Figure (tube, rainbow, N blue to C red):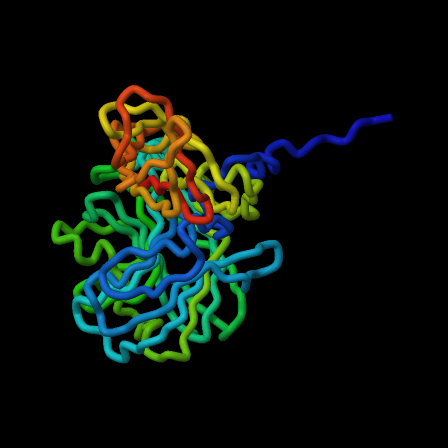
Length: 362
C-alpha cells in the first residue's frame, strides 16, 4: 500500500509548534494583585498580570479596570475597562492606555535594529460598544521607534479577532537584556500623541508619536461616555507572516511565567510558621520566591495578625521589613520588644492577609 505524502511545508508555514507567543499572560487568566481597581490618575494598575492600565497624565476621565469573565469561546477571562467618569474631549496631553511590556531577552530573536529583522504577527480579541477605527502601537524601550497598526471594530458588543502583520524594524535601539524590549499599546490618546504616519515604522526623537493613536477618520475615544466598555484578551505576538491559533498554556505554566515579574506569599486562611533566630532584639528568617525573578524586586511586607514566640513566651512584634533582597530570596526582619538575644523562636503569620509582595515588573 502506498503511503500518502506528508505536507511538511504546509505544517511549517502554519507554525503550530509550541512556545510561539512572545506575550506572557495574554489569556488574562492570572490576576495576582487583585481583580478590580479604580483607575484613578497617573498610577499604574494591573487588573491582570503583565498588562497595565494607566491614565498617564491625569485626564479627567476615570474607569474601573478589572479581570472579567466575559470572554470569547475558548477563553475564561478578559481585561475590562468600564468608564465611570467620561472625558468627552481629549486634551492634547491625555493618555489612556493598556500596555504590555516584553522583556528584551524574549525579543532578541527578532533581530530588530538590523537588516535581518523578522516579520511578526499580532493577534487579539477585542470587544466594545464603540465601533470605528482605532490602533495598536509597537514601541521600543526608548519610545523613538514605533509602528502604528490600524484596525476597525466593526460591530458593537461583539467579540472580534484582529490579525495584524508587521515587518521587522531594521533600525533603532532594541534592548536584548532583562529590561524592556518592546511595548504593545492600545487606548485613546490626545493630539500630542497622534500621527498621520500609519502602518509603517516611524522615528520621532520627542517620543510623542511613538506612543501614538492616529488622526485617521476620527479614531475612537473609548472614554467619551460612562456607557463605554472595552474588553481585550487572547493577545499573541509571534514570529510569522500570518496568525496562528492562540497558544493556551496551562494555568500553572502561565502563573510561573508571570511570577518572574510579580509574586506574593499567597492568600490562605491557614497560619504559617517561620522559624527564626534572635540577633539582638530582632528575629530573622528567609523567604524564597516561587521562581527566580527578572531582577532584584521591590519587596513590600503586607501581613498583619502576627505573633512571635520564644521560650514559651509571646513577644511583641513592632514591624516586619525586608532586607538582603535578590532575585532568588530575601531576609525578613521582625523588630521586637522584650526579646532575648540568642534564643530560637518562631513567627506565627496569619496568611488570611499576604505576608509579602515582590515586584520586578518592567
